[in-house]
Image 1: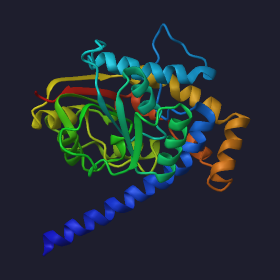
Image 2 (image 1 turned 30 degrees about the horizontal axis):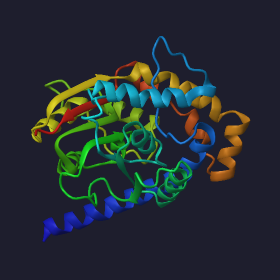
Image 3 (image 1 turned 90 degrees about the horizontal axis):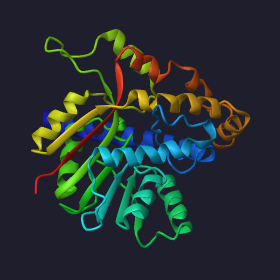
Image 4 (image 1 turned 180 degrees about the vertical axis):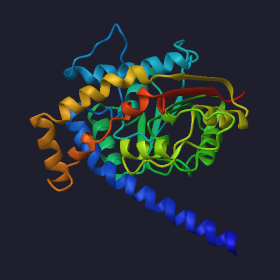
Length: 303
C-alpha cells in the first residue's frame, strides 16, 4: 500500500510539473518567436562566427548543423535518417529544419497545446505538412511504437524532466536499431568519488540562475552512465558552454530593447512580464566556476 501511495504521489507531482511547464511555454514561446523566430534554443558561436544580435537565427541553425556533425550523422543520401523525432519540439523550428534538410518524415512532441498548434500553422505555411506532424505528449510516455525513429533530436528539453532514467529508457524504446540520439542539455559539474551531491551553496546558486520549471540536474557523467545502461554505442560528450555564452548576451540585449519589453507586456502582461528573470544571476555566472555546463551527448543504439 505504501508503495502504491508513493507511485500515486509521484504521478500527481509529475502531472503538476508538466502542467506548469506547458503553461510557461504557452507564453514564453510567443515571446521568443516575436524576438528570435521559430527556434527556441540557443545558438552556436565560435571565434570565426561572431554573430550580431540581428542574426541570432544563423547561430541557432548553426547549432543544429554542428550537432549533427558531432554525432556523425551521415550526409550520404542513401544513409540519411528517414524517420526523425524531435523531443520537446517547441514550435517546430528544429523539426522543420531537419525535415527540409533530409527530406524525412519528422514528428515533434511538446507538453504545450499552444506550441503544438503554432507549430502546425508554421509547418503548413512552409508546405511541409505531408512530412512533419506534432503531438501533445509527455517525453516519458511517448505515443509511438517501439523502434520508430532512426534519429532522435532533443535540445534543451531534458532539463525539465525529473526521471532521467525513465527518459533515457523511453528514448531507447522508440529508437530503431542503429538510430542516433542527440541530446543537448545543461548539466551540473561531475562529482568527485568522495561526493554524493552538490554543495548546498552550489544548489542555491543553481536555483537562483534558472527558472522554477527546471526539474532535476544531473551531470554529463550521469547521462553517459545511463547511456551505457542501455548498451548504447559510440557515446560522445563535449562541453559547449563557451560556444553558447554569447547567445545569452544577445538575448538579454534584445529582450531589454523596446521591442522585447513590448513583447513581454503583450503576451505576459505587466505583472508577469518576466524581465526580473533577466536580472537574476546569469547561468554563465555558474558556468564561469564550472558548476553548470551546456553539454552535447550523442550515442547510437546497437544494430
